[in-house]
Amino acid sequence: MRFPNKIIYSVCVASLLITGCNKNVLDRPPLTDPIDDNFWRNETDVRLFANDFYPQYFVGYNSTWGVDYAPVRGYTFSDDVTSRNVQTHFENSVPASRAQTAETGAAALWLTQYAGPSWNFSWVRKANVFIDRLENLAQPNLEPAAYSHWMAVARFFRGFEYSRLVSVFGDVPYYDHVLTEDEWDQLYKDRDNRGVVMDGVYDDFKFVMENIRENDGANVLNKYIAAAFISRLMLFEGTFQHYHSLDAARAQKYLEFAVEAAEFAMTGPYTFASDFKSLFASEDLSSNREVIMFRVYNSNLGVTHHIGSYNNGTESQPVGANLELVKSFICNDGNVWQNSSISDASSFSLADLAVTRDPRFEATFFERPLSASASLFYTFKFASREAMTYIGGSYPPAWGSNSNTSDAPVMRLAEVALNWIEAKAVLAGYFGGPAVTQADLDASINAIRDRPLDAAATAKGVQKTAPLSLAALPNDPDRDADVPALIWEIRRERRMEFFFEHSRLLDIKRWKKIEYMDFSTDPDYFMGPWVNIQEEVPAYLGSSYVGKLKVKKTDGTIVTYNGSNAADMVGYFMIENASNRSAFDARVYMAPLGRAQIIQYQERGYTLTQTTGWGN
Image (tube, rainbow, N blue to C red):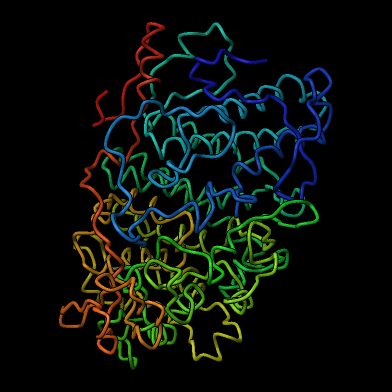
C-alpha cells in the first residue's frame, strides 16, 4: 500500500513491512517482504518488523562510508571545531525543497546545521503502522504482557522520531494513527504546536516506561535502554522549553520525566568500570559495563564502518578542535587552568595538556601535533592506541578504509548520569525542585571522573580528576554571567565527555547559546596548541607554507613564516586562513520548510505555515 507522492505525510513512502535478522546485531538486512495477511502471527513476526527500526535510531558508527548520525564524520558543526579558511555557514535563505525521498537517515545538510532529520514523516507512519497492526492483527496472537511490550516498542520509536523532528522544525503535524488516502484535511493539516506534539511524545514515553520489558535479550531494546534515551530526549525538550521561555509547565514536566527515566536507567547493571578509550575503540563491547547499548560490527557479517579510520593519525580531519574548546577542559586538580596550582597548568602544548588535564583529554587527542588535523589537535578518540602505531605505514582493515570493526557505543551510562544531574540542577534552580546534593554529584560527575585509567595513560603520568565539590565549585572567569556555577560545571562535563559525538550543537541550541557559533567573540576559536613548528611539525616549513603558516605569541604578536625564520615559529598555531562564518540570527534555531512543501499545500487548497523568521 502506497500513498500518492505529493502527500506530505508520506513524503518518503515507507515500506510497510521490512524485516531483518539476528536480533543481537543492529544491522538487520531485509529477508523478505511479508504481506499483512500472512504476518503478525506471533512474537517472531513482530520482532522482525521492530528490527527494521534499529539501524535508523541506534546508528552507532553507521556502516561502510555512511556518515549520518555518526561521530567524527557526521557531527562537525559546532563551536568546538574550526576548519581552514571560512567556517561553514548557517543557511540564510529558504531552500527549494526540504523533503527527502528515501527512507534513510538524514542528509549531511541536516547533520551539519540541525543534527536531525529532514521534513520526512515516513518513520512516523511506519511506527503508526506498527501500532495499528499490533492492535488489529497481532493482539489476538499474543499474550497480554507481550502485546503491551511490543506496543511500548512501537510507541518508543514514534516518540523518538517526533522528538527529532521537533528538534529541527519546532512545530510539526502530529499524527497518532495511520491515515487513509482520502483524509485530505489530516494529510494536509498545518503544523501543530511543538508543545502539543511533545505532549504526545511524553504520553508515548510514559506508556513505554510502564509496559516495556526490563529484559528482552542481549543488546535489544528494553526498559533500561528506553529510559536512557527518554532521559536524553526529555532533557532536550525540557531545557529548550525553559531557556527559550516557551512553556514553564511543560518544561518542568519534561525535566521531571528526564530525572525519572535517568534514575531508572542508573539502577541497571551498569557501572563506570571502563577506561575512556575502551568505550570507543574496542572490538567487543559486550562485556563493557558502562555501555548500555552498542552496535556490533563484524566483517564476517558484512557490517563494517570507517569512523576509526578517520582517527588513525593519517586520515585528514578537515575540522579540528580549537583552543577555545581545549581551554574548557578542567585540570586534574579540579580547577580551571587560570586557577590551578598544578605545574604547567597554563601551558597549552600537547605534552603538558595530556598530564595536567582531565584524563579524557589524553584519551581524545593524540600526544603530538599532527598536520592531518586543521588545528593540529588530532582526535584519536575513536581509534585504538595500537592504530596509531601504523602512522607512516599500511593500516590493517580494522583501522583503514571502510573495513573497521570496532563496536560502537550507542548509549552510555555517562550520558544518562549527566542528563540526570543537569535535569535535577535546572529543576532545583528554576522550578523549586529539591536541591542538588553532594551525593548527587558523587553519583554522576564524580563517578565519571573516577573511571579507571588504562596502562598507557598511567605510564604517561595522567591522573584522575579531583571530585567536584558542591561547597567549592570552580571559579571560572569565562563563565557566562547568566549561568549558575553548578550548571556551568555540568555543561563543562558534557563538553569534555561528548566531543565529536552527538551532543554539542544540540546542547548549545537547547541552552539558547547559539551565539557561541559566532567566532568573532574569541580569537581562541582560530587557534590550535602551543607548538614549536621546527621540532614538532617540520613538514610545515616547506616553501608552500611561506606567507601562510602563522603562530601567535603570548603577547599577541603574530609571526608569519617567511622561509628563513623557522626558529621563531613557536607559539599558538593559527589555523590556516581561518575566518568567521557569515552573520546569523536566532531564526537558525529552527529549520525553514522548503518552498516546494509550501506550494504543495497551496495546490490542494491548504496552508502550511513557514518556520518563524524565515518568510517564504
